[in-house]
Image (cartoon, rainbow, N blue to C red; front, top):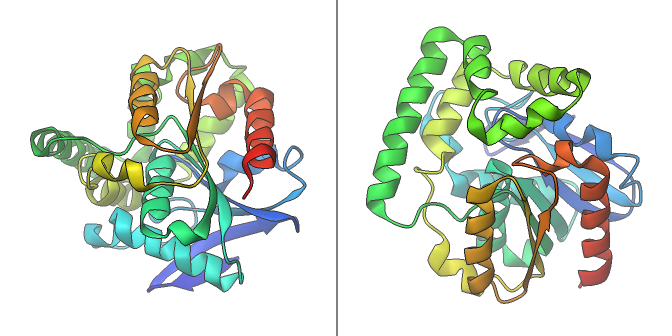
Amino acid sequence: MNIFVNGVSYHVERYGDGEPLLLLHGFTGSVETWKPFLPYWRDYQLVLVDIIGHGLTDSPNDPARYEMEKAAADLDEILRYFHLQDAHVLGYSMGGRLALTFAILYPHRVRTLILESSSPGLKTMQERRERMKRDEALAEEIEQYGVTAFVEKWENMPLFASQKRLPLSVQQQIRNERLNNNALGLANSLRGMGTGRQPSFWNRLSKVNVPTLLLCGEWDQKFCRIAEEMKEYLPNCEMIKVPEAGHAIHVEQREIFAKIVSRFITRRRV
């Protein structure tokens, strides 16, 4: 279904009738990221959202409309649309940064928080400036050469090297999901909610009191280091390093990922 939220048409899908679980995909993803988990999480009310600029959700011309705080405000409105007081929130990578933003700005809306391969942003202004320059160059490249050329480059990044071990059919599903995005949305997503553009939330982690689970794949050394450091600041947190997985645990170890999420919610529900 499409929901008009703060001037943007959002594509949202909902399944089941149990406790609400809000699912937020990563950059170049869509609601399709979470479709394989419908059989695993049938006891929950799953709320799948195409984040602004992705999938079937609108791609506004103004990069400022993609800012993390505005995207978090959109999530607040989406929960309100479904008359949901709060939800368990799971986000992957970029979706994890949005999930964390949502938990910081709307703590009363979050029952538990699950962050897969994510971060609170970059610590220093210098780091953020450098990252914004790289993201702007990438955004211009997407606009100039198109989504297909970008996806070819993106899926060959070292961050996703472990996905080459997946069956070719699964790799093709991931590629198709990425290709079903549009150049304007991806470019402005980088400009508006890229890692360099978002605020640094390192100094606000100590205020996140909801039960939090940090997930990283053992082969994703960068994000495991980030998770280890985040764990030192988050007061109600646990961390799991998933064996034989890289950045995208949910595709590289699907069944294990599904069980970890279910067990955490069951054990830590408020």
